[in-house]
Image 1: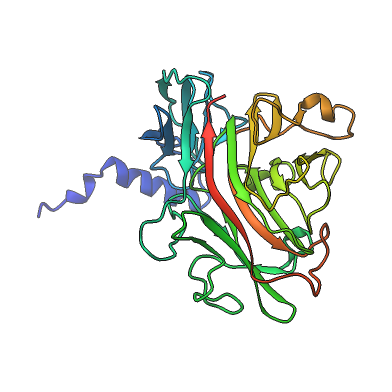
Image 2: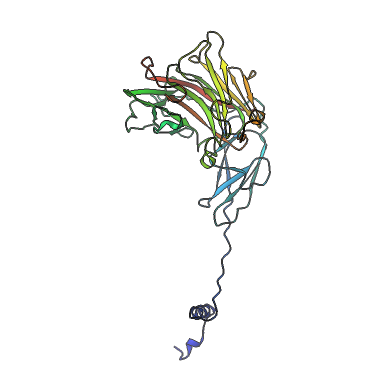
Length: 376
């Protein structure tokens, strides 16, 4: 080794010496901050739905990133719709998406144009609840997940909701509260395993399937007895960030208790500044008909408009628009803010129907033939 090799000081060594000198009271050392990394641009993946429609999935490789998207060709911002679940696309659109993550600059925009040209009234998504297994089957796990547990669900309900294969009491795998029967119907069953104890099911497509706009139908028959509360409804995907009621709620099928004359269904909307019964409309069935018979409950949802019908989409019984909430203090129309997911449930008890009585029969069940989505 050469005798005076220590004289050969590298640039990095010199920087270290100067930094140490600064710690001893000399000139203050300066530091630099490396520039932020850029979030990874979203990847757009599509899978075929029905008759030319597409189910769109957005992903990014940046951990913890939020994906914002638009469908009108505009550049997404942090005020745009937040992607939380695959969504149905059945109309012409230009999808733009970007990712944002804390400590990183926004990604570049990923864009994809969709020229679908699907005629109005076309069936673009469906769950027919087919079952050829020869035994009761799980509702499609690619579409349906579950809310589970007790606690009243904000309505003083009495049931414990049980997911598929739930085995912790009072739930039981031998008596599932939701299954697709060999008859080709979804069965949502309310049970009373012991005095004062009730179980049921609340299925939802949250995180798996969502949509914005279209004609949505469920063909169903419901139980009509004191304390029973069946429903088919939608909630905004953004419920995880803005909570209820800001996410918006659209109730397509909803009724309580025993049949009346005439019998009825209520179609409602809820949002910030309009909850409860302030925007609910009763539909009375024709003479001789009840909700215990088969009926098609539908919603026609377009920008700035929500209409409900029963059996005949050409004759909605109510239409709601932002004008319906214009006089309500603090009200905000939430139904153009992004995609919604579907829910089907059969509640027991609660602030609206009250509790079951000695005449209420268990098990009680809601049957669903299909859920359909059509283009407007």
